[in-house]
Length: 285
Image (cartoon, rainbow, N blue to C red; front, side):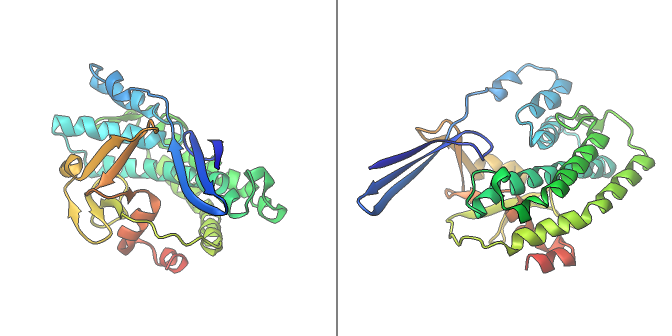
């Protein structure tokens, strides 16, 4: 017997699941991810270099900032230009605000309902829903911080190769720091709350991969590293990571050194653990 779930909505994209059952035995589970072709690589061909960042930001409305920053870095790499430390630090602050708002959305609205076996955040237990007002505040503040440096909450307009198109003043940086301090209690609660949930144990084959940068938790530059301890210069990306489409999916599957791999927050924390604050290490030992 085949059981189909034709549309999975709490993912960034479009998914479906097919479950094959023989009597009372589970035989196979097939997960499919389908995205309409958008041809961004082709759309960018022949465009002026200063157009690339804003066009690339449109790849996604959630991770819009990192697409713009990656595009800026690509143009800089092609031109042989290295941003100074001030620009890198401002980009780091911009990326940090965008990462937080993205994680808030993912944790509370995409992931949390599964822990309580409910269809959406609207169906969470009342004792949990009481926290959602604070969640919306966290999202609003980090969106504001993205706008402070990026010029807009979604699809930043200040990111350009070699520069930001607005001056970031000391008053703006003080405002950034003050508002980040204001939400620290909410971020601590979020980390502790999700750490204390009952997590299903699942051994996943493959590697955890992230950037590795001396002196800080990496977001924007560094070598390609995996948890076993080795690292490689970023120029070897195409040698290490293979991308291919496996029908019936329309999205690319990627393998690192021939095996599946995970990127994102968990590998970043595990690989950059030496750069975590002590209180973070206490929450996630």
